[in-house]
Amino acid sequence: RHMLKRLYNDNNLATAVKISEIFRRICVRQYPQAVALTGSDWINFLNSKSKHKIDEKTAQLLQNAPFVPAESTVYAPEDIAKLWQFCYQWTGENL
Image 1 (cartoon, rainbow, N blue to C red):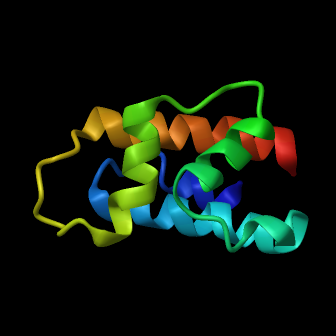
Image 2: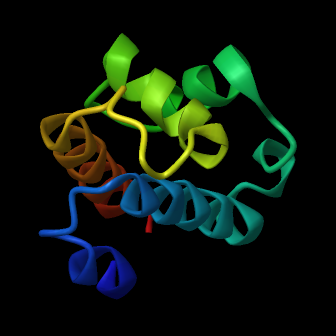
């Protein structure tokens, strides 16, 4: 969660990539069977481990961030803030 807190005000695409990496790091330790999941299986897994569900646009951001060019305007800062919030809640429930 410390790593996540440092990203709080960074609402750029690189932050979304870092959040994705944080999820994967947690799963390596807590849920190793989930590390290889992708796409909707990955999102369904994350949702199954949280009271707070990720919405569709935020889920797309999480899945696509590593592949979207840094200068892209497909996602707004608000989208990245929503992803951060979901990750913060999720980590609170799973660590």
